[in-house]
Length: 289
Image 1 (tube, rainbow, N blue to C red):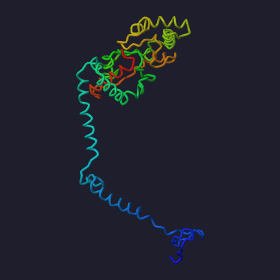
Image 2: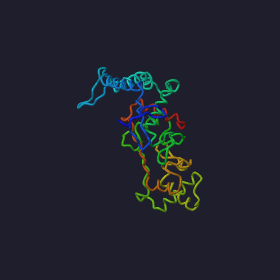
Image 3: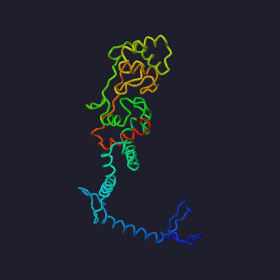
Image 4: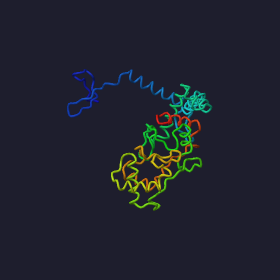
């Protein structure tokens, strides 16, 4: 304190603290307005603690004199949103699809709701744009197993494929290799023939041998020309659209193992109105028949 002096440049008294022999600290307090704001903030925080929930306790937290609860606000907002949607949901449940499509406002609600539900439940497998991936079908094209109609799509979503649901699609392609129905050489030949149906296949002799095997083992489900039977879940092998890949090794693996992909049944997980909205949305993507 004895070292206090006036700074020659600013004229402000120093605190007496000196660093490096020549650096002196000015005794310049905070502006009064700043201090008043600080004091007001302290008073405000005390008032906030009293009025609103603030402090944790052993069995919960202080409720505040207003009894405010963000959970109650959220619950009220959700209830309000559901109330505003009620007339649309009732209409979806009551109207057939053709009437829904003829009501622009209702159709917009269905498509938006269906898109949201698709993103939540279906996109992890089929992709955000429903473009599909290897082993998960593209829902935008015209290539459908079982049915691409609205009713068919709804049944597939509701009951699934090889899902264990008694109403689900449950066709199974034989495991020609794993069950030793065909040898590896025969599987190679029939794969060569299958590829030739869509313009592939380069080994003429293998195709000839494969054609005879196909007629004996595969034509009952896929048809003599390999165009499939959608109602049986037997895909069209002549259109160049492949679920598991169009390389010869991919086709051989399908013949060898039967693949046996599974889609879950959404009945019980999603309510009937949500399933209906999803069905309309998927049907609208461009591939619905």
